[in-house]
Image (cartoon, rainbow, N blue to C red):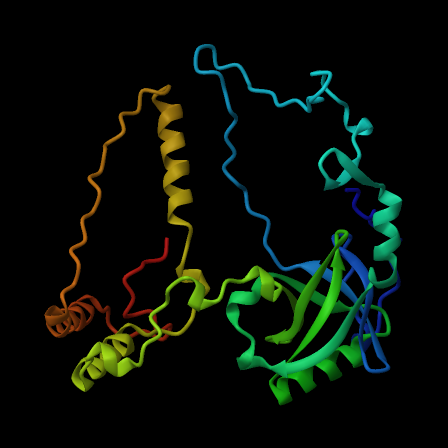
Amino acid sequence: MAQRKHQKKSPTKQAKPEEEIVSDKRALWKGYISFGLVNIPVMLYSAQMPTEEVHFKLLAKDNLAGIKYARINEITQKEVPWEDIVKGYEYEPGNYAILTEEDFNEIAKENQKVIEIEDFVDREKLGTMYFEKPYYLLPNKGGAKGYVLLRETLKNTNKVGIARVMIRSHQYLAALLVQDNALIINTLRYPQEVKKATEVGVPSEPVSNYKISKKEFDIAKQLVDTMTINWDPKRYTNEYRQELLKLIEEKIATKGKKVIKHIEKAEFKQTNVVDFMDLLKKSIQKQKSTKSPPTKSSKSGSKKKSR
């Protein structure tokens, strides 16, 4: 489906501090936050940092030739160019309702550039399972005052706005909330897209049925306290990606002759109920013995190391 073209604008004069606008051609769209009769001009930006994915090309094993994929007509068995492909909804076998780009634009145009807040909810009551993808909102020209007003109001009330928003020709349910000094929206899954805990067999009997003693709870809490640190996302890296790149470099250096050392799969013994207390105590001792001396960054108490 065609994406909206970015509008290019010439550089503007230096704005006043209260009306400072970030000039960035990567804005997905420019529109408004709407709640009640208030409209705040904003710009929508992806909050995801572009990462260099490790891409692999599929090759034929015998001669390492690239593998091509073709759009084959089921009847003629001939390849079909993109310009001759349409989108059809099969409402009964063999019969389709054909939709054009104009059709999709028609139903999207009314709310394509507005984040219309329908409700506000308590932040702690919004389940994390519904969250999908974050976006930054920045005030557009004339929107700084309204932006800050809404931001501070959400902070003071600990509320989250529930809205609908169009992003790249798709309508999403979204949560509008505050992260540090930024307003962000995080697209949400609709309820029908999330399984209920009861559907997957989550233990739901009364806690007393599991015969967990107060001492077990106390020592488990102590272990959690021992492993607790200040949240610092910089501590965590994609270790698999680093090892993959290292392996690729070694393959290149040895012209494909790098010998892979097969690591035996780690075996985990099931913890018996009677072992819990002993294992919890040993875990606490291990944490204490591996802790580094206290630092200002409070990075002690974690098994993982930054790379």
